Amino acid sequence: MEILGIDIGGSGIKGAVVETTTGELVTERVRIKTPQPSTPEAVADTIKALVETIGYQGPMACGFPARVINGTVLTAANIDKSWVNVHVESLLKEKLGNEIFVANDADVAGIAEMTFGAGCGEKGKVLIVTIGTGIGTAMFFNGELLPNFEMGHIILNGDDAERYCSDAAREKLDLKWKEWGKRFNEYLNRIDFLVQPDLFILGGGASKKFEKFKEQLHLENARVIPAKTLNLAGIIGAAVYCERRLNNEATH
Ligand code: BGC
Image (cartoon, rainbow, N blue to C red; front, side):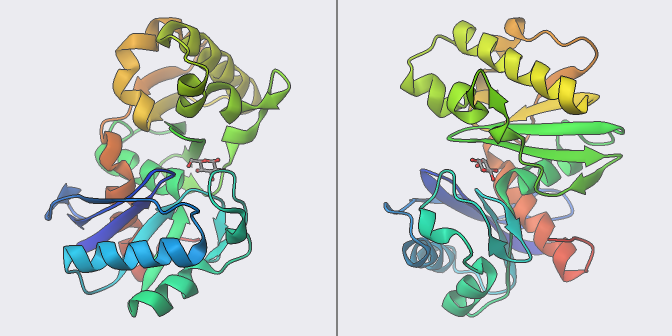
């Protein structure tokens, strides 16, 4: 099926139509800056502009950078605080006049990576970690998603982990990849201690630089590999998620 997938990020809102059987994009990827402040109205208007630019009609889905349960946004670490308790699916449906499903951004990126990327065919516990403005995590067990697994906010050295070792933290503190890699290694080891995944797949912006920090990562048992779908994961995963929701194969 050809479905529009949308990825809402802290700096950009991106979308493209995806063929869900192959994960390939069938239209150009369009990117519009995330409005500031990123209030519900402003973001909904931007999504409308994106859908019109692509010229798409039909059901669609988007990855959203917060915990989303039953279509309602429950947290707001890196978006405007006024999103908390907004029923984002109804808001967007009203604005766009089309069916639109919304899930956590790391969860949909994880779906893309497990379906078409580095996680394809991987069994056991797989944790996808997206490293960007925030840290997103998506946990899969034998290929099944456990939604809203928010491990970007564990406490590390007395602070929220994403303030300690997200890509935004690296930029803000002007850390060299080696220094940042050491911090990120602490983070992965802490998660390893808590939930012991068999495999970590690193996605998001920083994953493109995997070669620059992989030497700093030392885990006793788990493997750590970079994602393959890179910055398209959110778009591809959203389209696949939409198809699953249409077929009643996905929970919120
Ligand atoms: C949010 C997560 C999100 C991640 C990546 C975190 O701050 O709490 O829900 O997946 O950022 O955007």
